Image 1 (cartoon, rainbow over the protein chains, first blue to last red):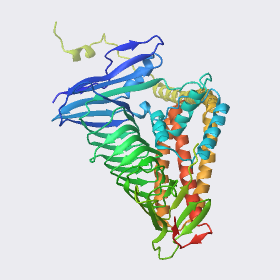
Image 2: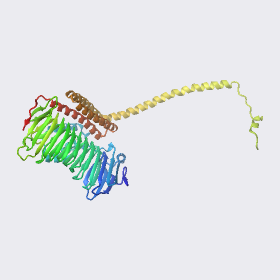
Image 3: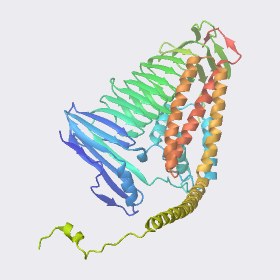
Image 4: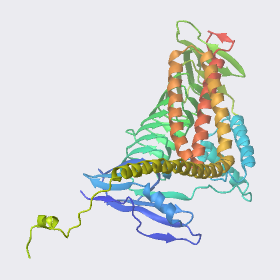
Length: 384
Length: 173
């Protein structure tokens, strides 16, 4: 087995006109076939996945330095540990960078330059967030949010501000370097990812099985389409334009945005989840999450949900052409500006809270909810 | 020419000097003088130690002064925020356990908050090492916000469940 270790390797340096420099960490390529698997185990790294122009995996990992400082380059490279190898048709990439290479908290504004102004902007951010928390979103609106998003809402807020006021100077991040890791993979490749404190973005649709296990990692996908997909995510952020098939365990995620989902199972805990459209055969079980079901497709057939201490948001229910049955105990229904708590009994007996019939025979599907200690918000469509 | 070295001492030309009678007294006197000189040397050492200590203290205070000047810019503000947030977190925790009797829920939240606190301590160490590390600061603030928000949300959730308007009648739409 030939291993390629590039831990502290300065192969070449590209100087740009702005005294930026790029230092190469790792560059390699591997031939693949339909059975090849890409196995990734990474800490403190930012990776962008693109579709390969051929049947090879191409890896190109560099660090971009704002200023050409030898000390900083030495410090950064001392904390990088990246290696890639291929054994029995498995390409294994291991990146075990130290926290110095941290990618997640990198607000692209100069906070220190004007602290008072920053405080004002933060107030505005909190206010806007509060005002918009119950607003309806169309599937298209959520898809554009995902497309635009850098990850955390606060980062998106500043990105939006910069776009709105192009002549205002918000300053730049104080960070002196940035990771640039591009992996080009053939579309037929099976991928397994284990990530910690990382940022992983896919710029192509995935049709082959993908397994992701992550802690405090920002994940962004376009389309994920396979019944064998398995996601076990703790903390961090998960955004995907479309999900077809698979099992998704989302624990303590501070932001989850899914454009549309079908033939999939979600298991959630204390997460904030927004779903643009529920498609065919989706099941969800939850403990104490806040979940927004903005829309249902015309033929979603069946949507099953069980939750404890969940807070759910449904929109335009009365006008929609689906059946909806809600069972539960100690559950509050917020509808027409009226709050009512249902099924309060010492025996904690499940009772029927709500029964909604479809408008006509061409029903789009059946929603079955079982809520314990839950809050069900049924809201009108008010666009922001 | 070979000769026995012992014969050399037996010869007359080798000086045979007798020790003076006062030799023993002189020796004792000299010894006592030496002894007196030793504590004199010891007197110098504490002075040197004090001088070194003063120099060290001056250096440390200059260093600390530099550090505290730096601290004014960012760390002092952050310490204030940290203090206020931790106080609010504690207050929210007390309010939360006041409104619920679900021990399983309390246990889950205790674990969640403990994990967040462990992570906070870890990042705090990084921030102390490098107080210019804005990303560590962002991480710390987010951690505090997250804890506060979690507790506020669950408390409000339970308060909403316990609101007065109750019903056991199914609603038909």
